[in-house]
Length: 100
Image (cartoon, rainbow, N blue to C red):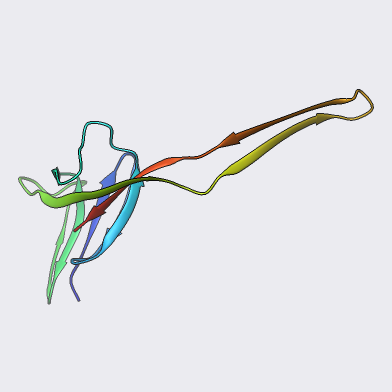
């Protein structure tokens, strides 16, 4: 089993080949664009392990943007008891789906 540990937008992501992952919205990327990540923390191929300190030098990891979508809707409700004040607000987070 081969896998890679990447750092993307301040978060660490465990990635395997031929799978898709949801990331925070990438506004400069369009559908079908390739992204190249260079902050690789760890790379394991068969029996060989490469460990970066903190990142591997001169390595990139390619991924393709396959979809932009929104997450599930969250409802935020503010109330003040005994004051007859209620305010509701909705939010949907945007995500980008990449295929490795």
